[in-house]
Structure formats: C-alpha cells, structure tokens
Image (cartoon, rainbow, N blue to C red; front, side, top):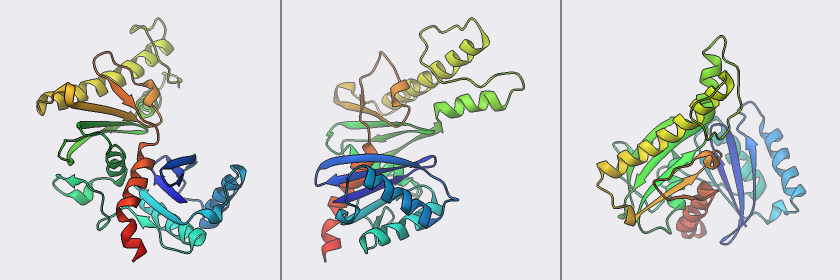
Length: 260
C-alpha cells in the first residue's frame, strides 16, 4: 500500500491507497513544534483506530509547503517503511510542463493538484479553497501556465476581527441576502459574498485573457472551504482529496525508478 502525505500550512492530509483505491484519509494540524516521536505516535494510533496495519505501507510519497516539517516527515516515513520516501522536488517526474518564470518556485501543493486532475483532457482551471486560495490554469497541452494566490475565506474573517476594535468574531456562513440588518449579518455577508465574487471574478479573468472556450474547459474546485463556493455562471466540479490523488499519480510515474 501507498501512503500519500500532503503537508500544507494549516493541516497535513494523509491518504492510504491500495493500488487505485483511496481506502482512508485523515488529517493532522501542521504543527512545527511537535517532535518526530509525537507525530509518529499520532499516526500509528490513527492507523490502529482505522484498522489498517501500518506495516502494510510499502511506500510513502510527500508534498510539503512547510520546510520545517519536510525533514520530520521524511524521518517518520523511513521509520515506518525502512525506505526513503519520494519528496516532491526537482528531479521528480510529474508529467507537467511548468511554464513559469522559475518552475522551482511553484508550490508542490499546486503541482500535485494539477497532476491529480490528469484524467481531464480539456483546459483546466483548478481552484483550491483552503486557508490560502490558489487558482491555477493548465492548458490542454499539459502546460502549467501559472495562477493567482490570495487569502482564504477564514483569513478574510480573521482580518476583520483582528483589525477592528469593535467588530466581533463571527462564524463563516452561507448567506442569501447581500445586506445584513445587524453587524454580525453584515460581516457574514461581506465575508461570504466578497470571497465568492473574488473567485468567480478571477475565473472570468483567466477565461477572457486566454480566450478559453467554456465548452472545452473543466473548472475544478477542491479544499476545505470548497462547500462555501457558489456561482450560477460556471460549472464547478468539486473533487475532494485532489492533492492526494495527484501524489498517487506522481508515485506511479516514478515507480520504475524506485524498483531499479
């Protein structure tokens, strides 16, 4: 079995694959202050709780945007399998042609999501709605053309609360009405609708700038806040665990090298 680990700024996601099948997923907080032993114990306890034998894990593949956690999880991986994991970095084949000024600057989280959507032959726009929002464009020649990065909806809410002496902390909720009739409702509406307008507006800009035909375009949304995204203009395909599937696909591409 394969263990895919996607280390992002706020959470680290795990996916256990048996060939093509994603058997289980779970998450831990991306805590740089936890020791190797603490994290390894957590992982083993979760495996036990899910009735998966950890010694059945034969290979591990890791994507990380948190450098301090990369070494920790590399060590944990070697403790679990006795082998070095694949870490998404220069030299690992992805099947993508990254057409950016400096391909090494493109976060591995964005790369694995693009590879996770490889079954789509159309032009692709991939929206990741998490604590950091990314919207990336991959054309039908498998070229990663670039994207945009902006705050997630939770950071919208956090900035309002932290930067004002009188505004309260509010829960993020879907709201139908644009105008709120009290401060709390006005904040919730502003957070929800402005975030949705930002995403739809960015998608529209990409479509216009690259003269994309929406009949030959797949727009994919993923991430922890994907359920908060709504629009009536485009067909957004919600695909959970896109990054984990991307890691599985990259493992398959690089598998032969491991066997040599």
